[in-house]
Image (cartoon, rainbow, N blue to C red):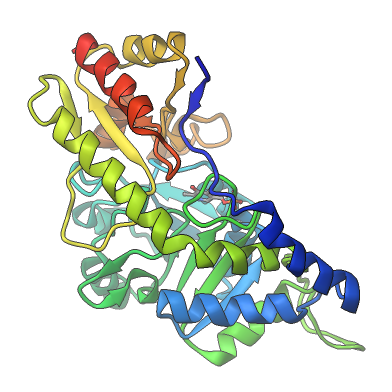
Length: 363
Ligand SMILES: *Cc1c(COP(=O)(O)O)cnc(C)c1O
């Protein structure tokens, strides 16, 4: 039987990409803010309902640059329950991560625990909309306002998610997206920073191009974070199919949920009231998570334990006082129970049935 992985990128028919390539070959502009780059920035602003957006070569460089753009230093409060790039972006800026525990329902930074972690060195909060589930953005903003902190959302999972105020990406000072091959919307590799004003967008555009403002002026030690024309062109094509892909994910999500409703020992995450993107389908296994994980693997189903281990358990973080297990009991429990099941638009019904059957047998 063919292996089933946790995700599979949505690829449009190859022949639909050829005209884009022909254009690139014709005008010979490969990168540095070419036509496709400009078009994709505009198209994403329209689709996501945001004012400004700067494309990047990947989400990690975008996170690193977002911190630079706001001149963040000292300590930043963040979650241990995320992909390691969240905290790595802090270390790359010489910033000390301060881990705060998560809320057991939203799986995101617990707003009730943030204040206790604030010190005179704290300059920002970097929450993650884990699995595309919205953080408590109102409470986080209130705390940030009270203590004069910036908020940079790692929104790598939150493409297209909407809350009652519209696009989730409009909250905080900046939001960072990833368009990696494994994400809901992909450009092979890619990412973006969403920002509310023109001036910040300009600074970000300088920073992603070595700090160049014009031919002879460099205003900052910028990096090369530019997205190429090939990736931007692919993004434009990918965007055409996004609604259809999301519909299929929604259907798969509903089938999983329904199937596990009365299965003891297996819990699904809360659906919430937001417009979801069905990026992931985590289940929480009360007992013997790893036995189920292995059983699925033996049967050719490669779920992933996102996020296990916790970021705070990796060697470059575990010495931090905030990484101590006593500080992060909820994140630890969730991390020991989670398996993300295969979730992608091309997942077939019989494949999903096989996954569900194996899990029910196990339970
Ligand atoms: C994927 C991801 C990133 C990194 O994005 P890349 O585009 O792979 O560099 C950062 N944070 C989270 C939460 C992610 O899932």
